[in-house]
Length: 244
View (cartoon, rainbow, N blue to C red):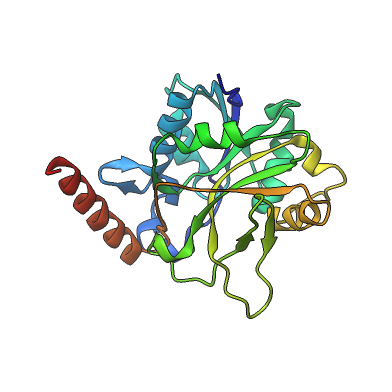
């Protein structure tokens, strides 16, 4: 049996500026994809994987997320409010007292994915090796990322180690917003706001940044136009699966 981390952090403190006007009146994680708030879908997946506790950071319209989740029983939800937005790295570092001393999931609260042959969370847990990893990131091929038009984030080596895309380089993989981190990744991390990218780069230099290729579908929901494209694609996939 794969040992699945029992705690997770959901990053939900972003401003969602590119999702305006939809995000003018609600935080992006509460925007619905096919009738379900994105953060609810993430929590559903965590619950199904066996995660017992989830920490959600809050900033922009955080009171709405807190009210939305206050009655959720599984996983048990606690909140990490940020008076000043701490970005991804600072947000997780600020929540470490709630996350314990073992490896934990960190998932963006506004991502949408379909599993492949087995759940992505289980695949990440099965691939995790704390003896050689400080961070294990789910990576999706840029060529098959619905709604994504960037230059990619990482090169995934044949053994699984990650290397960041260099300037002017096009990378075949985009970070899919789902990962396992160990608290030691944050040893020596600064106070205040900073990006997880800073810690990824340090881990890569130590040979402790690893990746796992996602074997299902992944959707980039960045703008209202992306949202329409993703919902159309999900509808197409569901119809196709019914008629197989």
